[in-house]
Length: 400
Image: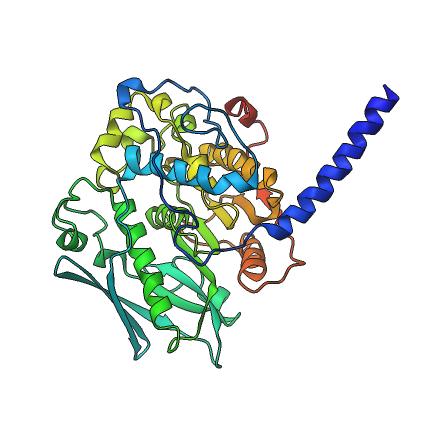
């Protein structure tokens, strides 16, 4: 027995050493929208899908051939999850068009995307710090800092870039009548989160095209939003690997909350009760059969790995299903932990503040993630897990 314990201890030490070494090899960000080329994924029909009562294994191959926790396989697995989410939930995100032009003047970035003779224009106000740069930057959904206090970024010489999402799809889209439909008239079924993710990617394309005029450090891009825009930030980062840091504020159901877990709670945003135009109408065939989904939203979060993600919750609003978000966050963190980079994912769920208002006790946590993953301060502690659910048995949802 003593020999057995000694061997395990040595293996544990070796494993820790390997994990530490591996963490140094895990990219903090990529220089392309997708780090590997698309490939075919097994996507069964609704009737062919098996029922999975617990949260699906993020490391299991879609075709049922096994699983892999090797980092070398993660990019492929991440793309499989993305294919499932697009196929069953939000619709396929269009690829980058061949014709994109961009200009920057008078503190405004202008990106023009042309498909089949039709053009969509994105305009984004840019707030630059004093100096020459290049500066880290945050893409704020709806405003330069999303719903976070602007001084979190301005005090750190971080540029702020507005994503005007309505220039792609309105908050309550009219299917087939939105700006993106001028380019893709056939994509009437598309959910808003696919379209908005496409828009964020095209905005980043524009930043790349004007890099000689707009001094942005493209290796240090963040995105943030709250509520429906918190969901938007998650989807945008999951489907674009050029985003180094995601701060998702109070995203609730359809964001960080797991559909399966939310079904067991009270008056929360379940799959059957979420906004129909944000997702594909076909998704709602799962309203009374969420167990047939081959994925859940812990895997949407996991798609962001190995990049950094920080989730903010608010227990004062039952609709947000924060207990479900807690379970999903615990499940998703297994991915970062397995890849040896647990410090790149954290969450903080607290109450006693308004919706989309950052309370004073969460501010240092957000600052920690900004300082570490936008400013490169490596000695910052980002191992943050704050929640009010000590009696929630999250392990029963995770059997992998």
